[in-house]
Length: 220
Ligand code: E4P
Image 1 (cartoon, rainbow, N blue to C red):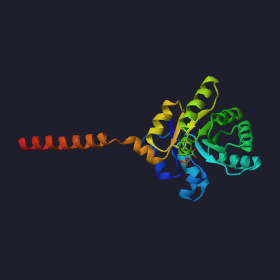
Image 2: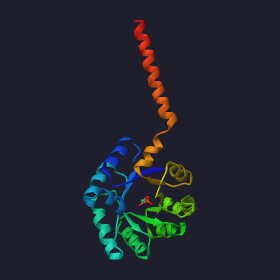
Image 3: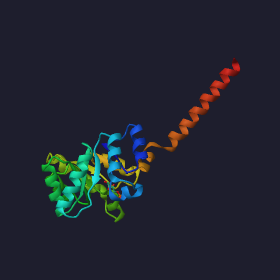
Image 4: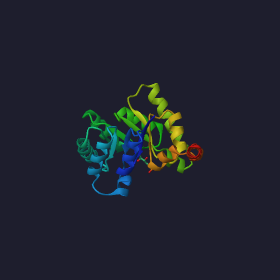
């Protein structure tokens, strides 16, 4: 499973890239609002850090507006993927952007049917929101599993991107459910790295190493 970072924070993206685990980045208007500045500049910089897909979200409601924003973002870098929310107009925009060779990520998916339609319209990435479904007492991972199976059974081109990830368990579950990609907040990525027994083990090894060296030095 590929791992994307779900953030517009350049420092977080650089750190994940240094760890060698970064396959791409997803942004959205809310994540952008947290960092501010110029969205175009942020996208440009992110695309210099990763050559993987970088999602840039359109906010227009009408098809022509979505197309204009999408074409604009697509010009920023070859690895930009235009993020379009699921709607009747969104599907049309996805279809027309696909005709122009512009890759799209259909976002705000909450059912496998929505994902199936997005794939048929030509979206490259399908983003069901796991956490937001869990928040309303529905099992978000079921949508990931169903959609991944639909994509596999019918040999669809699109990839399932598990979004709205809230904890490390979601990452494991998304991988087991067949998600091609999961996009995670930086904090969850850090949580995936650490385990109390790992940290305790490192400290113990350091302590034993120092003690052994002190004993060797004392012996001369
Ligand atoms: C990513 O593509 C989504 O916009 C994001 O994962 C949504 O996450 P949230 O539900 O935590 O806002």
